Amino acid sequence: PAVSVIHYMFEFLISDDELMGVTKDVATIPVDGICTNYLNSVICLYAGQYEQAIKYADKLIAKRECTDALYIKSRALSLLERGIEADVVNGELLSILDGNFDAKVYYQTAIVNELYTQDSGINIMQKVVVERPQYLKAIIALRNLLKRKGYLLQIHPDDLNDLSVAFNS
Image 1 (cartoon, rainbow, N blue to C red):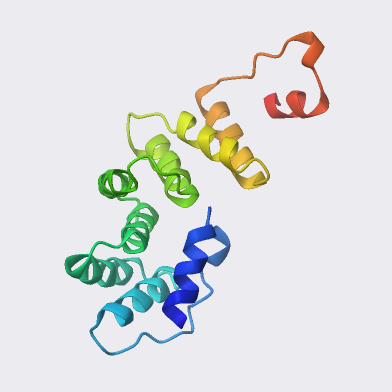
Image 2 (tube, rainbow, N blue to C red):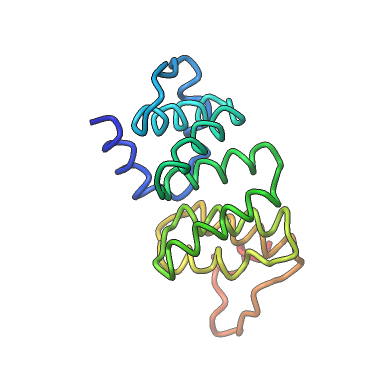
């Protein structure tokens, strides 16, 4: 049941920043298996034990294709500031998704691209905003990525409103 609940969470997850630290007091399961490696990778990621999260995710990936494990690995790598490695894993994830939208993967890829590669993450984050327009954190992330590049919205005077002005501030 725990694996199903966590997988369900990953289906709807966009950004997991709020989950960081929530499992710091949770012990890993001392059994080597597909389910336990999955659970342990999640426990370690959200406990801040990123190297351990990668280790458990790799054990799972070696046994079967698992987009959740690849996401966990990418996230742990980026938190360790190993962005180029995270970018490679994101490429694997996007290849497996084959054009299907996964908000957490697109969000993670956009951030990694902007921080660690020559690729722009702006168009990818824009896709997250288009697909999940109610998700304020993605809108703020897009704004921050645009500001980081020095881009501003080009606003026609007839379309000027408080939101568009705030977006450019």
